[in-house]
Length: 162
Length: 162
DNA sequence: CAAATATAGATATCATATATCCGTAATTTT
DNA sequence: AAAATTACGGATATATGATATCTATATTTG
Ligand code: FES
Ligand code: FES
Image 1 (cartoon, rainbow over the protein chains, first blue to last red):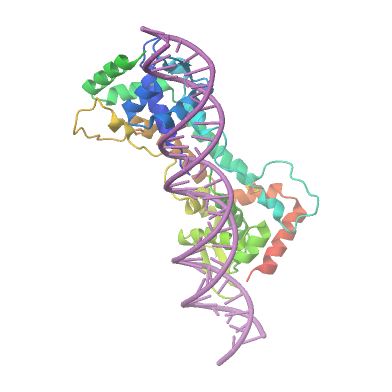
Image 2 (cartoon, rainbow over the protein chains, first blue to last red; image 1 turned 180 degrees about the vertical axis):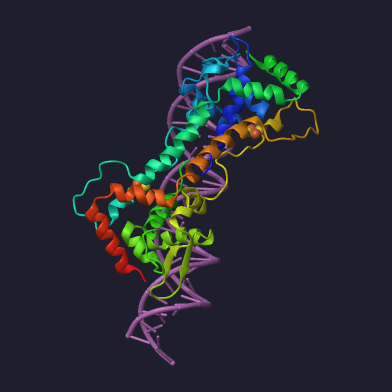
């Protein structure tokens, strides 16, 4: 059970877009080059972000993407779910219903205990991701990235931004 | 990103084995019938439990499986990881290394901030599952299952147990 | 008008989950 | 001793989803 690689891509891209000045846009092509990713496929991830309303896009030359909200208001969970979907990691196939001892016509009222426990674990996972804002990530990255690389990247992005 | 259905199967089977009297064994065939599952494939899940040391098996007629530990000492995480594996849900492909602004020969010391955050979420998920013992599940099930069905199932199992 | 862009749909490829089948060794029952 | 039953491992088949590419279209910039 592994998250799609698009999740990593989306997080990196959002971190870059968070550093973009107001009103500027960065294209799929630039984001793909910056991260060494297949442009066409990365495009799918960005479209997911767009459909989820996390980023805003414009067409034409000098078009591309920018964040639709402030980095403080975008959570990890927003980004992960935009790409990965919101469904739970555990699905209850209700195999308890196959018990041959079961009286015929018996109907289960509530979800079973197993599923509830597994879903609680899913929920703490989600809550943890909800507690981290995109701005928190940017802070950490700016602290951990070598100053020169951070500056060069910022300039590279501004150079490519429409 | 969905857990394999074998995870559900393994949890149900362990819950049944937890009710088995000391020294008795229950076969794959019986467990498959009880849950309406394909015997050959369920066998793979049970083999995973066996390899992880969660259950003990014997060969021959009247052979099968029993728990290798007390239900209080078996956690949800033990069972989930035995079937699903212990790898994390987020894998860092280190695409930050593809940044064209990066000085050549630059080497990353620590894991990146994104991966660390995602792994923290994985860890709270695991911790939540570690906090639930198999005995807790059995308690909940005995409370929520209709008394007659609970009793009939227990008898059915004893009837099939070697 | 020409170039660049996002978007959607179609398609291809690959990995994994799901499922079945068979052979072997061990054990119990007859 | 023979026969039946079982766990186990390996091989194989099928279905589903992830990964990746390609094309066509509409929109915007210059
Ligand atoms: S019946 Fe199996 S997890 Fe709900
Ligand atoms: S470099 Fe992308 S998550 Fe680690």
